[in-house]
Image 1: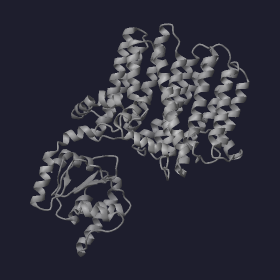
Image 2: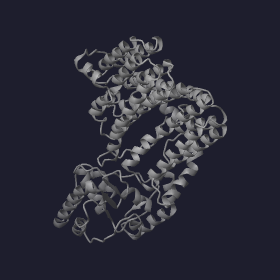
Image 3: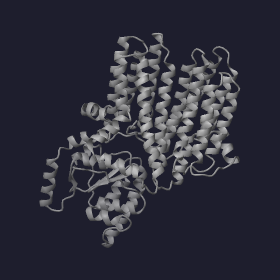
Image 4: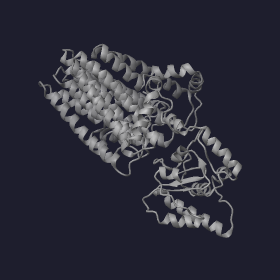
Length: 596
């Protein structure tokens, strides 16, 4: 009982299920409740995992069951069923899922969990590993269970489980060995993951400010602060897992702050270089574009294959075999330049070299990583036999971010058949657009025609459901087309301030695209259509920028227009995003850290 009280429960004793139902009815409807067999023997952390995780409406470990407010009606029904069965002397409940669970857990909480499962309320059963959770039936079994509890240090298990599995080499060996203890220190002082996440963001912003000074001392301080920000970035997730403090707000913060920190740091480096007379804004924007495109490739491929019916790819089988060899696992995780390795490289190079060298290294490293991962995914897609589902097609359509122009073309335009038609058409449109931006003089009206052609190709590409083997390439192609066009036009305009304004515009649009990804992961679909229409979709924004470049060729006018567009997109996107993520209906999605 002391263990339950330490977890925040008010403990009451019930003689039978009838009394348990009566006590349950007296608990306010907005409270979590738990039923625990009085004979329970186990680790406190086993109870914590089973009874306090906020992500699941109902959860159970042997001898214990919990229900959050949304699952309490199902628990009440299960108690009523159990009380009626006890009154007539009936046995254990039967139904779907009953066979396996009732064999291993014949306690009242265990049988109630089976009944809830059978009636359609999913009951989460966490993996306990070496932790003990048992209900001994006699003194001998109790002694055995107590010995098993004494043999395992549950605090050590709790610390180990706070570290994210399958992390990068740098994070695993240079950060996590001590950041987990920082997480425990934070937990014991009542700090929340959100507070640590915010501290990480503030530290990164200070690092960006230090880099913006353009001095050697500022660069050294920036590198050290960036590394410390990454330590805190690891700590917030470990604190959430250590104390099971998951929240919707935490999901939003964790999902967006990593990108905000990195891109703010790029801007700081560009400002610092400008103080020294070196204009590297084009490199900074190029690094951001490349990194954002890498991520959308990851997201798009994963969504396309999230629930594929089959996976017979020889490439996937080879990958699995390589993962069975220890050193290849770490090598393959390092060469994709995940966030730990990438931030360590940025921090060290900032301290000892110049911003230009930092961006050169970033562009080379990220380009190699993008080629490596994309080639592997192309091979998997071409060699696997899988049927994509409607859900996958819908997710890819949402990631495409098609605006009104593309939607009209998709409905009224031609539907070109062919397994590869969608990515080929998208690539043709994107290629023509970027080629025009590179070859046509700045201010040329031909750029508008290229943007219109791109919009038509974009609508044609998404006219049919994106279920082809390579259709996951469509969203990345659209991202590359939009971002690169903005970059090239700003760079070729030779207008002061155009590149920083373009950096702000791409940052605002990229935030919208990341926001879309995490909404899809939460099962709520893309942002509302009114938002996509308001900010124009990828083809609409590209057309607007092309028109601005063709019309506003006067000194500084293009910069002002890009800045205004960036502010407008940022305001609309941020207001809707914040409204969504802080609302009670938003999903509790927790970013466990992207591999890249």
